[in-house]
Length: 45
Image 1 (spheres, one colour):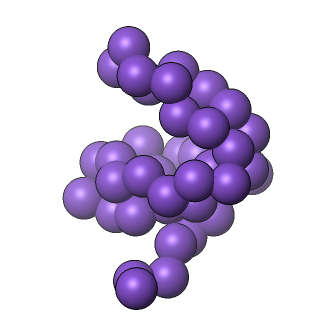
Image 2: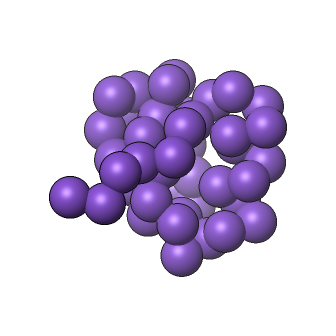
């Protein structure tokens, strides 16, 4: 699992993911979102 910070709002598995918030998603999904510029890596806090 990978933590990402969303750049846009989107739906994922029936859950609404809001822009600016940090979520944990599967690594393959995170890679696609980062490549598509809808998310960025989140720093571990």
